[in-house]
Amino acid sequence: MSDSSWGAPPYAGQAGYWGSTDGGSVQGAAPAGPTYDAPEAHQNRPMPIVPEVPVFAGHQDDDRGAARLGGPLFRDETFQDRPVPAETQNPEPMPDAPQPAPAPQKKSAGRDLSAAIGVGVGLGVVIVASLFVVKAVFVGVVAIAVVVGLWELTSRLQERKGIKAPLVPLAVGGAAMVVAGYVRGAEGAWVAMALTALAVLVWRMTEPPEGYLKDVTAGVFAAFYVPFLATFVAMMLTADDGAWRVLTFLLLTVVSDTGAYAVGWRFGKHKLAPRISPGKTREGLLGAVTFAMVAGALCMQFLIDDGTWWQGLLLGLAVAASATLGDLGESMIKRDLGIKDMGTLLPGHGGIMDRLDSLLPTAPVVWLLLVLFVGSA
Image (cartoon, rainbow, N blue to C red; front, side, top):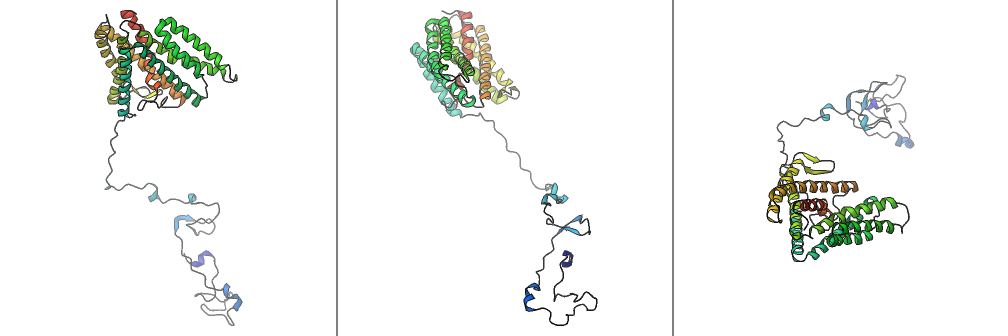
């Protein structure tokens, strides 16, 4: 494209300038007389030559057929309006370029295993020592775990949902519930549960009525979910072989969780409940059942007075089912609250409630089956 295609008039002194428009002048001749006055010098300075801008072939001006310039000519024209050359739309990879192999993905446990194992061993030592030295000390350990679990649960409810379940009556009533179950059995546990629920209703009356129903409902739920279910552990301890019954309960629950984790991590492919807990698999459930049934047969045969191996098989199957349901139940609560763990008190484990999720619903199951199999004495 030449400079004249831009529509700019030629300037004086330029080669090819026509000195007149009447046809009387010849090309290249200067007009007669002075070419310009001094004040007009700034108007006749040679204009800089503007380089031609590349154009895209195939796009022409509608009125004059001139090729459209590469830059935008109008205010409403943007670079998005310009076509993209075909060779830049879908660039083909070079055939000889080596394709890097994808890095193999390693399965992750999702937690710090060293910290989890260390904390688990430490808790096991404290529990076993208190269990076989002085039974009352073990009851105190259970009461402390209940109070901490209630604190974690009520704190998460208030943080995530704005639900203010009264902690003071829950903590006092929960600890009293565990002690009453150990001293007075099931009757004492039920009476303490009723009094705790009543205390929650009365305590909440000291605050404005807005949200009263949801607060007391959450409080009664927390009283049943944490201390009342834990009371069955204290009731197991009242039997003559109570320490071995509690140890069997703890071993079967831990073995069930371990079997589910080990088998699911290694062979798990089919999700058990993806909307509730995406990490749990059907293969893991089979591992939990297998490990718990074997451990149950051994525990009932060698640890429980008058127990037999076939009773242990049934006990292990029930523990695997209740532990899995308990884990899923707390997973539902955590999904609703939008959290991963209930707390951070135990490194590698989360909070106390993250360790009680399988134990709490399993306690009444083990207590009932042991009573049916070998009695309550």
